[in-house]
Length: 236
Image (tube, one colour):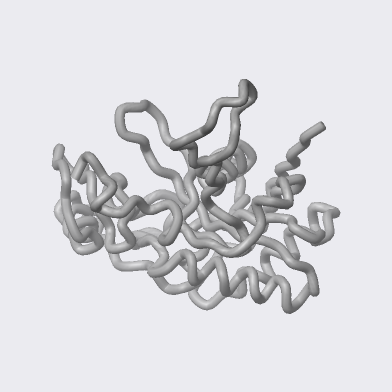
């Protein structure tokens, strides 16, 4: 029987620049009466990563300043409607308003996406391993909309210790047919599932995911595995 466990990990600390996220995470694990186990996966929301890394800029509250910040964070604007921009970020993400976050931020500020979420995930994973002696994986996640579908869901922006894409090409389905195109975005599926326990107003910037298949763990990054290359994109 397969079973997956998701645990929200809360902190009362309001994360600021240069705060130690690993200390906050491990404290939250202890407060939840949990311990770090082999091949646990930890979700870390991009907002606390950005705040700890200083990815916060002044914002005067005006529509004009909002648009200016968004367009500075974009390498390309695909669509415009009022103050809404559908953008391509320097990371290669296609999302609304370049991921600029104006909710749950200090007055007069806007939070940008992390500069390199894969690198941040590797740093967090390495420090967790150093302090606990346990091999884990880390996903950095954020909330994105989806083209042609209502609603938002969380996706992975950075990954360390997890293979973000499960390649089933060349394997057989339940009827013995050869799979020719099936690649499963494991990192995004996990991020979306974890979002069910990460309530936006509950002070839960971390989550523990336990029970993942051992085959999911290994090297990989979101930039290498998930961001679609322009030559493979039928919409650009």
